[in-house]
Amino acid sequence: MQSEVILDAKKVSKDYKNFSLVDVDVTLRKGQFLGLIGPNGAGKTTLLLSILKLIPSKNQKDIVWTKNKKPYLYQNIGVQLQDNLYNLSWSVKDAINISTKFNTDWDYVNKILYNLEIENIAKKIRQFSKGQRQKIDVLIALSNKPKVLILDEVTSNLDPIAKQKVIQYLKFLNGQHELSVIITSHFLDEIEMLCDTFFFIKKGKKLFEKNKTEYRMHGAGFLTKEFTKLYKDDKTVIGEDGRADFEFK
Ligand SMILES: Nc1ncnc2c1ncn2[C@@H]1O[C@H](COP(=O)(O)OP(=O)(O)OP(=O)(O)O)[C@@H](O)[C@H]1O
Ligand SMILES: [Mg+2]
Image (spheres, rainbow, N blue to C red):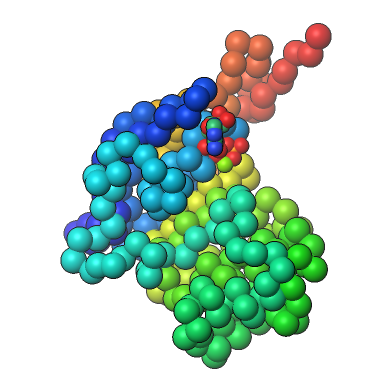
């Protein structure tokens, strides 16, 4: 039996001056781990901002976060975006308290601090390094005990060990607590490992969605091969190993 639908968004569309997101349907179910994949400028962040209603978009009324448990949208969703959602002059502690509306469960937050090895939360966010801030982003997104997590390139500045830690922690939360996640990343090995569903977009349009089981006959690295096949241009040559070569002039 399929699990409960958390998000049902129909024909999400957004027009910028030189870019349009066109009629993208997104469904997210409880416990689903959805990887949003596409090249730079494909519209991934625009889609996330639209479904979160952080930017106005066309057909906004057809973006429905579970009907029976209102208000679902901001209470139950943890968000990490490419651009900071909070003020960098806040301390980490301030940001947590604001995110939880000063109703922080510190036992729970301390576990995340321990698991992600974040120290000294009295310090201002701007005093942390870029990578440390990304771990803080995850902490803040989780501090409200969300049922859904929206992550936009959450590991891009992390060192390899920190990255593994964040990935494994997300996998743990998804497995143990049926957290539903939508994540974008250009690290396709990470998406391959974490996600059960792959959602491909190109130039503002949805190409298709595939379940991981559909790739079960393929070896590791199948997403990089799929990506190269879907998004290569005329100047790119694909080798037998699926690697892309580009001819420079
Ligand atoms: N505020 C804005 N005003 C005008 N155009 C915008 C704005 N934000 C994004 N765009 C345009 O929309 C397109 C999609 O951008 P978006 O940030 O959604 O891409 P993306 O898939 O998230 O890319 P990346 O992988 O680089 O993060 C780009 O062509 C970008 O120039
Ligand atoms: Mg983006």
